[in-house]
Length: 214
Image (cartoon, rainbow, N blue to C red):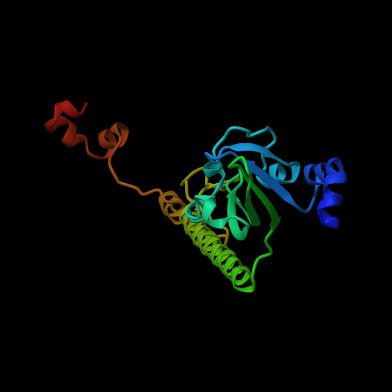
């Protein structure tokens, strides 16, 4: 037995504690059917899983491109990048070293993968495009809002009106007919007719000829 194996054998509990509480190395143990036997706290945090997922298939936590590397027997004692799916839908990329045990189980030791330059540029480009789309949508909605506001005309405040002729004084001090003032300061439109009193006063003959108007 070489010195390193002897060291591991003599300090197995210390190594076990290290892997369980490590903040840099994840471990995942799978059975021959690729169901989870055990994992450490770091992997649970990366996958944003608070409870144990023992007994669940590892397929549930892998993105499609990483599912294609299964079965792991083709990667025994090899390292491969694996993209895990966190519970919130984000991706947790890990560089995993896969080892098969004598009991046909698999041990996956992993470390977080730093994004490559091209991947960083791609993510920044996608983020920039999303922000540009949001800016265009916001600009369009602001334009639509301004157009809507420009079409809205309301009359507020005290309107000076003559007690005799009923003309209205505008902001420039000129007197205008009531219907003109309202038309210029609102979206209201007028249609003209005759009330019964005016019809009787100005067109009495029409009433005599058409008794139904009374």
